[in-house]
Image 1 (cartoon, rainbow, N blue to C red):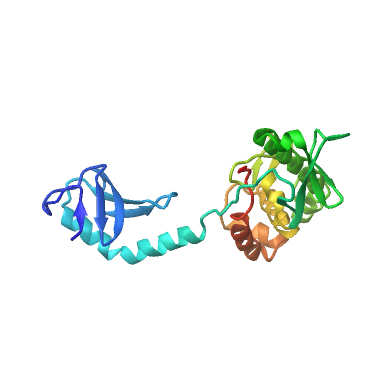
Image 2 (cartoon, helix red, strand yellow):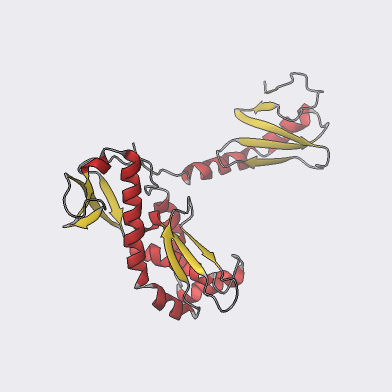
Length: 260
């Protein structure tokens, strides 16, 4: 038998109740202004049942059962797209990615230039004192990705801007949280906008970095993500849909800065 926080079928659920219907656990949200039942799958995969205030338990359960297949489908999609971002160790031999290639970490005992992470002979070299301090080590690695990524994009931004017929924006590479890129328009037409790229982006293959560059450059002309925005992206990058799907799949497996 299914149960709500109240056991009697003629009682109405109240805001904050929990409900279990045929193996699905849901949180109840009620509103006097709401006219219809609704279900949402939250970002953390929890389920919320929205219902008009005063509607009986039996109706709520019937609605959930009628939409169970939809809920199961959405939960499966959420699981398939769940981030799988690994944590990294600051230890000899740990693998890091840059532009789609893998490089192993080498811990150095110091010397000239040891204050910065460097790419030397196919290895990422980090000072021993940084490797011993998770905060300092993470900071040094992020700084390297920002520095290396910005230098790489500097040679590609102008050709992409020319290809898309837009003004070349200012560029920075920094921590954008879970976003790959962002575009901020200039204060007026005489000032260029600013394109920001997230440092984790530079772990991905070059063609996916190019997709994000094209995406953000399209915002120089179009602010939102309506049809005219995607038409502009398609003109510059006809295969953008495949690249977007690949970015979604590979991106959730990239290192986002967690240190174990």
